[in-house]
Length: 110
Image (cartoon, rainbow, N blue to C red):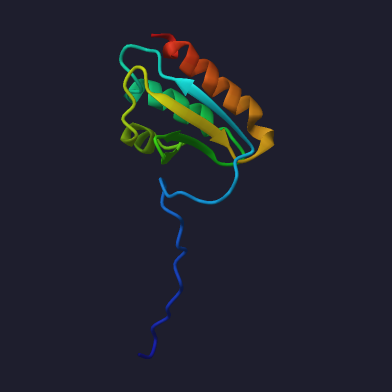
C-alpha cells in the first residue's frame, strides 16, 4: 500500500531464555533467610545488578533470570535453602557479583 512504511522492530531476546555465552564469573550460593527470595530481597538484588555494565543472571535448576528484573527473579521461586548460581557477563562487574553474594549470604539483613 502506498504511504505505509514498515520499520522492522527489534527482536530482543526475552528474559529467561538460555544462551550459549559463557559467563565471565559465576558463584553458587544458598538462600539462607527464612522468607526466601521474596519481593524485598529480590528488589535489593535487582538494584545492585542494575549498576552492572554487562548482563547479570541468576540461575536455579536450569532456569535463568535477568538479575536486573524483579519479576524475573521472583519467577524463580527460591525459598530458604534453595541453591542458586549468580553470574556476570563482564569481568568489570566483579564488584557487582561480590555485592550480590554478600546480600545473599547475609540473608538480606533480615
